[in-house]
Amino acid sequence: MRIYIIILISVLCVVGISAQNSADSVRSDIVLRTYVEAEEVPLNREVVYHVELRWKGDLNRYQISKLNEPQLTNLVLRGSGSSNRDTGTMAIKQFTFYLRPLEMGMAYIDGAKLTYTDTGTNTESSLLSSRIGVKIKEPLPEPGDSDLFSVLMYVFIGILAIATAFLFIYRYQTRKNAELEKLQHENLETIEEKYLRLLKETIHLKKENIKDCMADLVHLIVGYLGEQFNLPAGNLTSKDMIDLLKDKDLGTEHLERLEDFLIRADLIKFAGEPVTESDFHRYYDTIELILENQRIKRLKEEDK
Image (cartoon, rainbow, N blue to C red; front, side, top):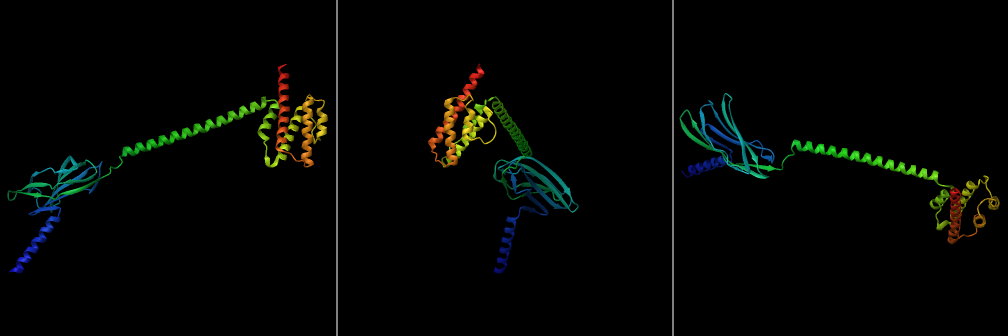
């Protein structure tokens, strides 16, 4: 007798556990099933909740007299609908609820309670489903949002391209104007102004090799004298150049300073005579003074 009691208790426990884990509620030959179409739903989408009844036989055998609206947590009811199907062997009645999430996190749908009448026996019964949880996650980008982003991106790229083109045109025009202005200035400047500019732009003291600086200084003044006074082409000695310049309008003082500079430059170049930094500065000032005085003299002659 004790063995039969133990077996009966075990069977009842298994049945109770099975009933607890099932999402469906069964009464007689009618089955209640509740489910959601997705267990994870974005915040800007809907939770679709179905309450479904199934039984074998005629679709009109059971009449639904009452279905309470589901009790909701973190959800709000937007709308509902129902449908009937008869597969020939199985009758199906379905109720669908469209639920809108309120915020991210967990949402819950309490068990649906349904009351129905068996038309064959004229008896009324009810069924209760289990609770369902749904995870509400981050919203998905809306189609309009992505289109707007694409439009803004294209607008930004277009503006950037136009700005780049304008910048390129501006820089090109600025450079062209500067080159034109420089060319006009060079065309208007006198010979003395040209060589004064070259003196400042190209002759710079190099302490490690002052002799080269002296040679550059000689090359510049010889170029000016040849262009200004139409001296014959060829390698003239310093003495020959001074002799040719004596009857030119250079001035006795400038001619003496120039002669001293050219003779000293020959000694540095050919005899290896040393030259100091102060020597270079003195000769640089001499050449600058000659060019500046010739420039002033030309301006006075043009004013006449």
